[in-house]
Length: 116
Image (cartoon, rainbow, N blue to C red; front, side, top):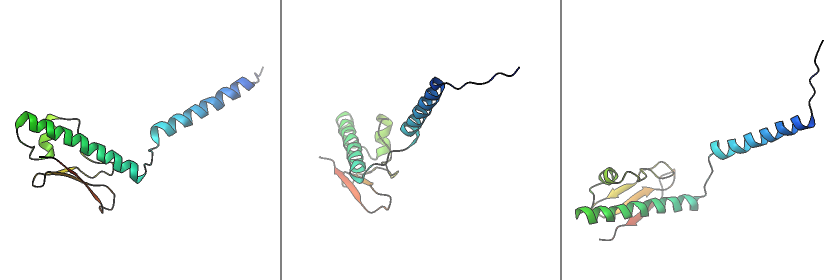
């Protein structure tokens, strides 16, 4: 005696909903969003302002500016080490400038001056 498998409308709807949810979740979690140049620049500016805030806190606590960003990261571990392009943030202690390169071709620099 053979059993016939009967596919109902309800089963088809459940399968379609499952596939829809799966692909929506996949796109949300696994596909990296492409930001515009302005959005990347805004992220970099935010990171630099965040670093600047921690430099001011470091100065208040120690009475001197940090010699480099590694010294700052020892005290404040929440600082980003690289910008969205993977280029590092650099503290120039001679000019008291935070530098980074904001594009993959290393053409543009964003500077953030630290007030004395």
